[in-house]
Image 1 (cartoon, rainbow, N blue to C red):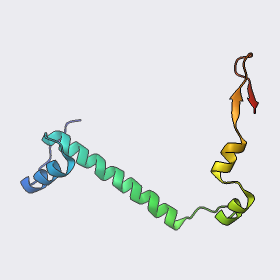
Image 2 (image 1 turned 180 degrees about the vertical axis):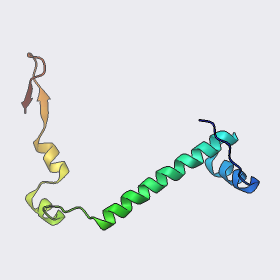
Image 3 (image 1 turned 90 degrees about the horizontal axis):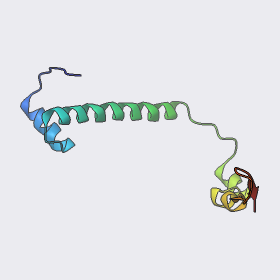
Length: 91
């Protein structure tokens, strides 16, 4: 989409420098995209601070039970058996 806007020369120079773009249009588009992404990230962070996730157990409890990701991955190795296509078996 083509848009006409008035920006001061100093701002355009900063945009070009910070985005690393060589063309004004590309630099302004990239700056706008970065701005939008940053605002979205800030919104997500703010939401997590206001509404923290409620985990069923603590990290200490998980470690105590031996359910860390590494342990679970070792215990749940899945291999494909030769023969019938798509059948899985545990080794």
